[in-house]
Image (cartoon, rainbow, N blue to C red; front, side, top):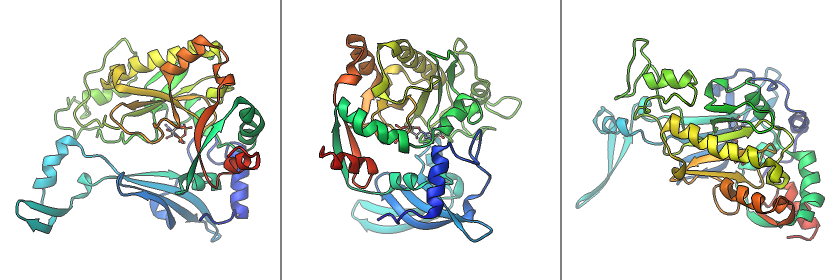
Length: 366
Ligand code: M7G
């Protein structure tokens, strides 16, 4: 179970509400992974080869500051697979029976990458987000939204400073795939934090990539140059990891929190996200619109309207029926009835010890 909130966490929660302190307007103060000490495992999945850790960084005064560290074994890269068998390494035979045998390999570092995502400083809410817990489905009517959910998210939601940093080009500016700068109907499309995208090595280790005189592959150079959509970049080299392709469109408008705020007034914006998002992804990554799952979460963790774009073949976290709403369906629903999302009940999962779940319990709704 989670430990009780500490005074330090209280302070962090305040900072969270105010948009953060040292994270405002850009990157967090520099630190290295080795500065972090593991406190406990929050959750792990043998199937997904991922572990969520509650860690802390000890400051000069000896006081620890919480962090969440997510360690994830990265997907195989097709062109490196032959090396896995060829390169000298320990290959320990564990079992041999007739035509079946199992080996355990200890590959060299370049063939055994792990992606580490760090949230630092992390609030109690971040720690709770990743802690394994019992989950319940809530059926929220519009009245429940107004009386229970809305007051709660207005007082408690995650900081969305990272979103503003992207929109204002203070962070991740070099990762932007597409932007429509219109303040009402525009958005920014960037790779999501969850995409194991860092597989394509520039300068350029990718066999089959197009080396130019700078020693970087042509795809890399051209994609970094943020070519206008009218100019097609060459096909990505084989090393680009597209199986778990995951991008996110963040709208420029700041007052739209979630699906619940949408009306027909937002149709031009939503249609731009759907159309331009698909066009940008096919041009940049060669993945067509019919191979993309394009959806909104309800409830989102971050209350600033955003749309998820994932590879259809990728079983992305949060893409199941109790959380994902296809953007094309949302557009059709709003075109039929402008007040659709202010009328209907919406279902979403909540963890048993989330404060919002307790509010629904207190109101006798679960
Ligand atoms: P959500 O539906 O609000 O919540 O989606 P979820 O995290 O429970 O899915 C927010 C999305 O934004 C998620 O897919 C996150 O992985 C992604 N995301 C979160 N952060 C803090 C960042 C970030 O700093 N940069 C980028 N590029 N994506 C982020």
